[in-house]
Length: 260
Image (cartoon, rainbow, N blue to C red; front, top):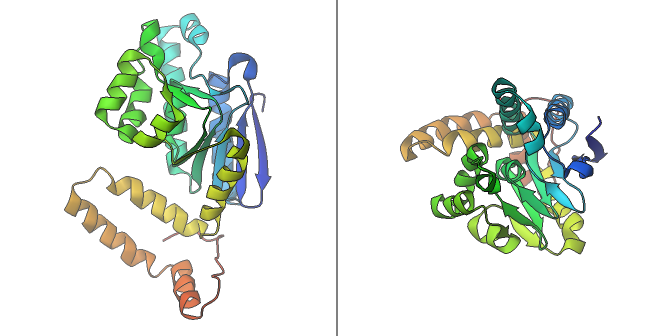
């Protein structure tokens, strides 16, 4: 991997964007590398959380305008389609994905945060979708951004290109928590470990259920979720979890088996 590094600590995988000379822009190569790494993590099932992080100077500056300018329309389409595949992979892998944002997350970098399941930001982080300033409206970042923070604030960011502070990102729901820069590593790991104590099988099942139901009509969602929870109740990890509750002991998960 040229533009990524991977570190695994117990049940957590840390994927670091490693292209600081280009502000961690989502080039075609970086997108392909990140997608490949996430698929490999999903296949191995050795971890329960993936943390995506940038450098001390920038989380991710989005797509490279230089790369976009130099490509044909079909090549640009392929670039954005590759990014779309990455977003789908983030959604489909069994692990929860946490974005750890120390500094700026811009355009598709902001999209990366919005597409993650959870996000932790330092108080020095900031977020923007400034493509409109260059005549390139942030159409693809708008999808996940508008599903995180609501129409009015999303429209403000998309049509002004202005930055949003970490505290605003917390207020509007783009991130889960804002912490000091010095405690970002510790607080992100703490959140990750709150997830890793759970069964990977049930994390996978719950992640799929959560995103399937979220855009359904209320009772369509309830009908779907009723079927899911009935199946879930007979999963070996659910049966183990219920037994451990009554026996007043920690559960022992069988994370090698895929969910029902």
